[in-house]
Image (cartoon, rainbow, N blue to C red; front, side, top):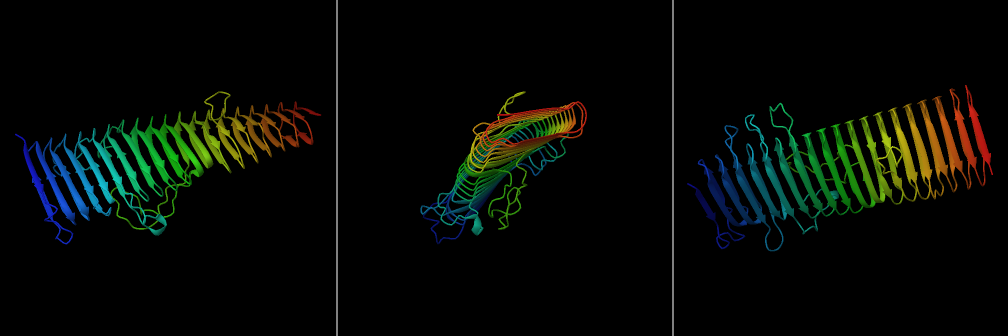
Length: 506
């Protein structure tokens, strides 16, 4: 038998000057339905359901409301297939504040919170469930606040805060926020006391506006995180620990910042930025919420995620960054068989890549995986590789371009091609075995190659206002070939065994 409680308070009974209404519902039998409707200001609704296949619905219209739904037995039993929906609407004048809290124990539950105005929303699923496995839960938070005249992180004003915590596997967490100065926090983790890792969780966060912040954490295997931010001065911070996880961040607008860190193996990270003055790394907005945790209370202190850019620690990792506009990017990979992409387009674009490990690549072509290409204006590429079988194949088209490659290890290969080049300059330093460096430049090209070690070889081809310096000093089968045109100047220094130097200037 299905029981239903329907409670309503009319608008006439709750005028603005009317006292607040508090309603509490407790249900201990299965298949119950609870519906609460409240209109006015300062109302409070609490629903507690202790069985399976229960439905709770709370709708509040006005200002200063709070709503709470608890579906579970305080860790005492498995309560599954429950549904909770909280809707909080602003007043007709657009003002309104609401707080929502949904707690669902065990698995296969669904929770939805929809808020208009200033809101605080928290959904917790499968947490503190007496060591039972959570999983298969779905949480959705939608917050809309278009009355943004007072929203400004610099003035310590936070509009909406949304938090989702999910334990176990195959959970889905979705947060959508429209407006300015919003905060989204999401945490998907293994169940308390669980030996096996959680798997196949999905997180999606969309923010539209400016001065928004999102922070997502996932642990386990095969998790997916997608973030989209549209507007200016937005920040994304993401952390994934485990294997075969995927993180994707898309930011459209100006002065946005993204930071992704992945620990484990087989992970994949992608950042796409379109606009000006965007940055991958140094994720710290002006002044947003305090220490981030689920269901935070606003403290007015600054929010500073780690300045990691895009960092991967493990094996078989992939990283890809695309920036259109005025961007800056950083990739740090520690582990085996890593790849770093990057496409940049814009004014004063900057890229910094660090790789430590085996079989790493920073590339555009040879050995493939492709990517790396920088287009214009004041661009700088730096690559630092330490390890075995590293490769850097770099590409720049455009103005004041500069490339610096430093390789320490075995079987390294570095090539610089700066097509139209403008004021191009290239520096390659290699220490180790079987190294090879190639540079092809035009315009006001300048090149410096330093090689120390075994079986090194350097090729430089330059024209226009060329200058080249090659130094091979520690021996073993070194070869240097320099061909230059236009305003040439060249210096080759070799010390050691079996060295060969050829310079042709036209």
